[in-house]
Amino acid sequence: VVIDGVPTAVVWGRERELLSDLLDRAELKKSGMEYFEQLAAMYACKAAVKAGDQLSHEEMRGVVDRLFATDNPYFCPHGRPTIVHLSMAEMDRRFERI
Image (tube, rainbow, N blue to C red; front, top):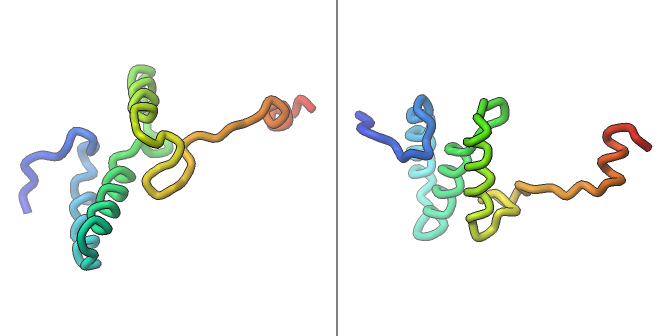
């Protein structure tokens, strides 16, 4: 397989992993929208910023701006929360102020 290019959201160096996952998903023989929804969710996770990735302030702003430009910024495609609410009491407790 020769990869001539990748979508801009895919970080260079992760093409092999993405292609392998696409082929694995094809073997599941899901049909119609279920397949494409799972594929889109998988692609979103693969293209996402990972823990430990170094970002500039401009890149961080871009991530937040793109998040809030989505239809549902509060959950990832797999249903996990992207935003959590911490009350002032919880913040105080976590920083051992109480």
